[in-house]
Length: 317
Image (cartoon, rainbow, N blue to C red):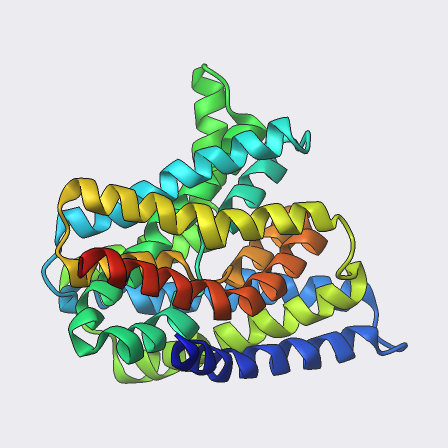
């Protein structure tokens, strides 16, 4: 367990460094908040959609899908998302858009930067196909879920006009558009031309550090202590409720031990930086979401090894 915690710390340390750099930029007296907003819009509308298009365009290379694995992980996500919306509504009196972003913080993991390397380190190469499946479908499923939830909160009603406004809002969301376009391209079996492939790879490589820089700028603007109760609630959902939900569903579905450990490990990862971009896009909960990312990343160095140890003890009884 101590070894896993140390490796988690080594992997997450660069994330904190990038966030710190962003914080220093945002705290610079010459820096203007509107520049942070502009940077956020560029990341959300250009860099992140390009990264998601690139990810989804490789669908033809995805390993065979084990439906139980996806049902266990995303079933847990749907359950916790519903819990998150209820907690946001009843405990914090949040509106529908804020509830959606709050709930997304409880289910969207930092699987690319932390989940994949930690899974390889703790579970071995055999866990990589399961992790790859979750990462590919993660963007498609969770970004679409929160986009539909937000647009329903904004425009949804049981009428043709209401459904039309909701559908238009979802389709014109840059993130969803990138996912859908990439998925269609991936299913076509075509290959990207060399220059386009190179350009998209470059933008994809920028996505994570750019999101973390914007996060740091947001922390300078909103502070870490602001609405700390919301940050603690999001962190609790993410580090405790989600892995438990995925574990229970995986057990009920009879997932093999290795695949079960892989999806529970991914569910136990810290809040992903992309949630903050969604908060910036919809102008809700920027401070609490930014704080929850920092808090959950720090605490996951302890909670993830504990969850892995508990699973190992249960599966080897």
